[in-house]
Length: 139
Image (cartoon, rainbow, N blue to C red; front, side):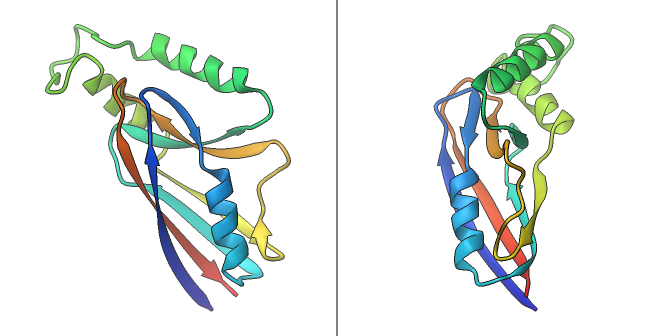
């Protein structure tokens, strides 16, 4: 059994989705693991990970529209506003989504489906540097 770990830095330009499928697939392919599991974890409370359709960007745009309606910036019910009107909404968005996900490794490659991609979903309106840990175990 092998256990490998690496990290990614994603520079965001504000709210939106950022494709990290390529770096994850390269990490898996270069590891020499035939069968296993790759765990992806983002170290933040105002950004999350998303496994989503990768063919039509309208899907991610529609998800953002839905989330903006569900958790609007500047909601007067929120008390926590230390970093601006998008601060608490970003935390809520992260809690509603996910900070970790697992990808199967099949025959030395990621087991993502044909139309699946992995994205960082930035919930803040300003640019941020996001840290991600990749942990691969298998044989």
